[in-house]
Length: 302
Image (cartoon, rainbow, N blue to C red; front, side, top):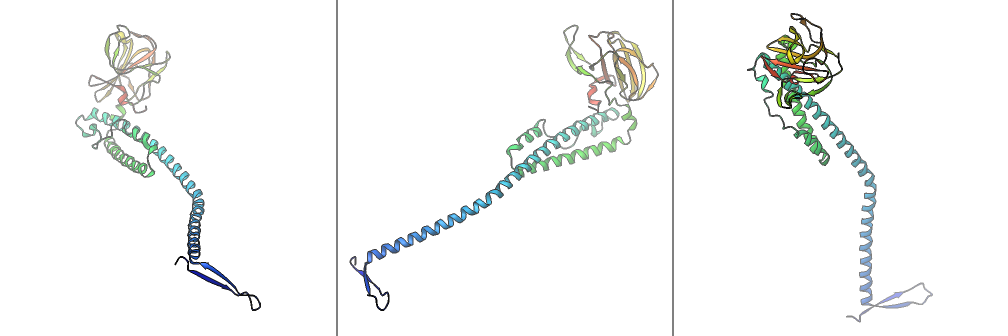
C-alpha cells in the first residue's frame, strides 16, 4: 500500500508530447493534509482578524460609555452629599421646633420627635463617604433611601406647621434669635469657674464682643427687672410668657425699664464688663418655669 502511486497525465495540446507524472500515494495524502491544515489556519486567522477589527471599532464607544458612567457617578455623589446636608439641617430644625412645643403642652407627642427611627449619628455621612466604591445602581438605591427620609421629614414638618398655625403667640414668645452676635466663649453646662478654678454649672452662654455692642430682645415680652444684681452687674430680665424668662448680664448700659413691653429685635442694652466679669461679654440665660435651659435649643437662626 505504501508503494502505491498515482499517474498524472498532462496533455498540453495536440502537437505536444503527453507527459506522465507518477505520484506516490503518501505524497498525495501529505499534500491533502497540508492543504487542509492551511485552510483551517486561514479560517482561524480570518475569524480572529474579524474579532480584532470589531473590538477596535468598539473601544472608542466603550471609552465614551465609561467616561459617561464616571460623570454620572460623580453627579450622584454630589447629590448624596447635598441631600444629606439638607436633611441634617432639617432634622436639627425639626428637633428645635419640637422642643418648643414642650413649652405650651409638655404632654404632646409632638415633643417626642418623629415616630419612625432616625439613623444613628454619622451613619448617613459614612454612607456618603463610601459612595465612591459603589456602582451607579447602589448609589441610586441610596438616593431612594434619602428620598424616603426626606418624605418622612416633610410629613414631620407638616405636622409641626399644623400645630403652630394656632400657636402664634407662643412663637412670638420663644427666644428664637441671637440677642447679639459674637464669639461664644463659654457654653451652657458644667465648666471651670475662671475665678475659683472649680467646676460649676454655667446656666447660660457667654458671648464676647466689643464694649457697647447692641443687645436686642430675642422675642416679645415684658421687662420685669432692669438694674444691678450682684456678680451679674447690670442685668435685664424679660418675661416672655409661657413660663419663659430671659436674663442678660454684665451690661454696660440698660436701654429699657421695668414694665416696658418689648418686641423681638428691640434694643434693650449694650454689652459691657460690669459685675464679676473678665472682659466685655454678654451672659445670656433662658429659664423655663425657673429651670435654666440651653439657649441654643430655642435659637432657630443658627
